[in-house]
Amino acid sequence: MIQTKKDINSWLNTNATNWDLEFPKYSSYHLKSGAQVYTLEGSSKELCYCELIFENGRILEHKKMTARFTSLMIQEGTKDYSSAKVADFFDYYGASYSIHADLDFTSISFSCLQKFFETLLEFVIHLLSEPSFREEDLTRCKLFLKSQLKHQLSEPDFVSYREFTALIFGEDKTYGYNTTHESIDDIHVDDLRDYHERTYVTSNLKIFYCGLKTNKDLHFWENKTKQIKQKLAESKLIYHTIFEEKKVQHFPVPHASQISMKLGCKMFSKMDKDFYPLYFINTVLGDYFGSRLMKNIREDKGFTYDIHSTLDAQLYDGCFYISAELNASELHITINEIKKEFERLQSTKIQDDELIMVKRYLHGHLQRLLDGSFQSILFLKILVTEYNDADAYQMIIKTIREIDATQIQSLSKKYLQFDKMSLVTAGGN
Picture 1 (cartoon, helix red, strand yellow):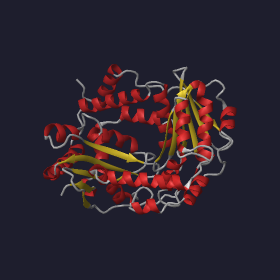
Picture 2: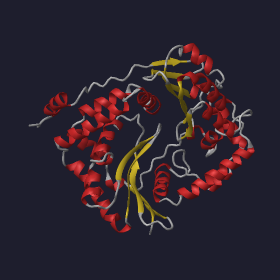
Picture 3: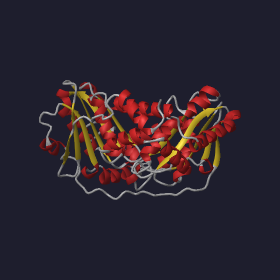
Picture 4: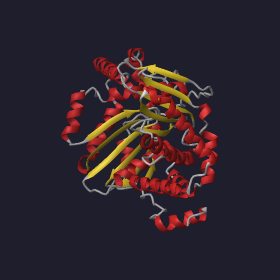
């Protein structure tokens, strides 16, 4: 019978396969320009994947919305390529690609046949280095974003999340401001040129490549990236906020039949020492299908189809929240049940069978993240960019294996304080 931590470890050693999961071998290069490159041997001789990530996003904006608009406008082409020609180029080589800007990064990724890799890499770097920023393209992007925003504001889940983050981080702050029609109209071509000139530079760049590594050495990457501007990275424009006051807010959404709720508080970045154990606690509470919130509020009470908790961490800040969509008449009883789950984590030590189940679930999740070379390079990207260190993988493994009931109870008392949680709802009255 399993009774002690020693018994748990013995059981895991016997029943869980290979706790010492080995990360695939990869190479890394620090270029003279300041860029960093990570390469991993692909399992396919025919296919390859490459992602270029600039640490810029909102954290280097001098003006709101410039990060997002710049990433959109890069797709509109260069002096020699219109947006249609850009699309035709990728179609001709049978490649898929995407460009995306978020709070901390701008990512440009593509996958293609190995034999076309160098051609496509050169083209992507050309797009990144010489965007045209045409007025007519900017006008079209503005119309697109306004149309998208109109649709999104009709969705309660979107509204509740955007208003929750504005409340937690500050509606005028880096991580908290929201897109509006006014902020869209206020963007001009010169704003984008300035943002591009300052932030799309090699000192902000990390490249992740999975494919055949033949001749993909330091000299190769130095040569291929020389077209990108070489400037020192600027200091990040982070506006830290400390939000202590608990608030309850509701935002009506016309024609919405249900309410979307976000209940949570400000937390911390992934660099915090408590992030890893809190990640485990968040899983127990509401981050997988067998979680406590799912069992109680979905399966037992039938109040919602889906309820989950999230530890939403950025490079410089973070928050924790519980999200669900439900009928307005069941909102308050659902919140009371959430409070009970907080109290249960704080007052009663987790049982061994549940602790083992979550450990095995997360162990399996890590195995999936390492299932094949393409998955592995994506995981490596997350570790290097979001956790700031590839060795964070070992800390994740260590935490999953060693966390115990006492630590879970202690940290639940410290961080899951219901009286400090703010509630934001959106939808029907």
